[in-house]
Image (cartoon, rainbow, N blue to C red; front, side, top):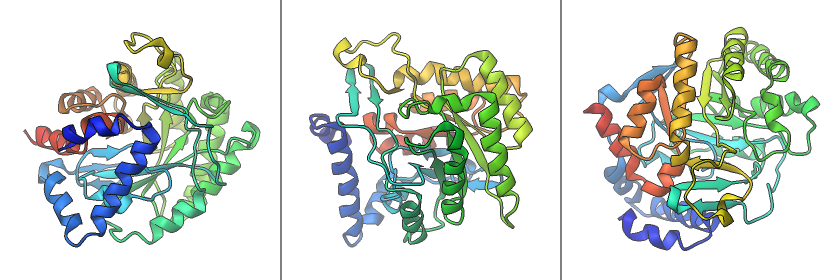
Length: 341
């Protein structure tokens, strides 16, 4: 079915297509029996798919990466597609419109996307309210991906992460600290050792003050050097956070086949061109740390074999986004079936 409608969606502006797809999911969900039909088509359950990672039990290891549902608008509908976990955001303390449009571009010859969305979202309080009133609450693990507002100077960034952390604490199962998006000016500077230690230690101290703590993960860029990855390993171990998400989008444009008219667009590149590098980062972190912490692998997963490669490299869980757009919602089921064998 997706192969039939995909050409129509790909004629549209990517953001318009996104809203048509998510709007369609909502419409189907409102029809009597619609949710059950979607689940029947896309769910695949098997006891061997269950994973216990950083204290949480995932019904399967395939998650939806942050960016698809920034404001927690579609969690109920996305649950029906069979994901083992869903990550909302990136959420910032205050609402912000993001960067001017157009800000997302398809590189179809490379099965890739370039985006410079710029953390467009309605703010942490709005996302928290929507999560609080989910109809299907408790049916899936939910992560909260948090960032800073564009206008917040880096010296005050920790306060933005605290505000998001506090707002979402009661409605998410784990947190992801996003300091690796290339689309907020200066954000990646926070990946440096000193500011990153400060943010993570502050959140950990706040986390441990609660009767119930939440796993905190760090999302990193694929463009880090081996030396910087060594620092990441040290930071994770010193701060005691739960793990790492590897990786975010890349600023590299090497080896692309799409017209330079598109590849010159600024923003983060995702999709198949990222497959190899994200796997390299996963393997490096896993081997150099002696598997000391869990890794969620993301980047260029367009098939079951891509997913298996990430897991073999050392990932405990995986996430998809661009592959979901190019391959359709059946990708989750195909991966799960392949993992069962």
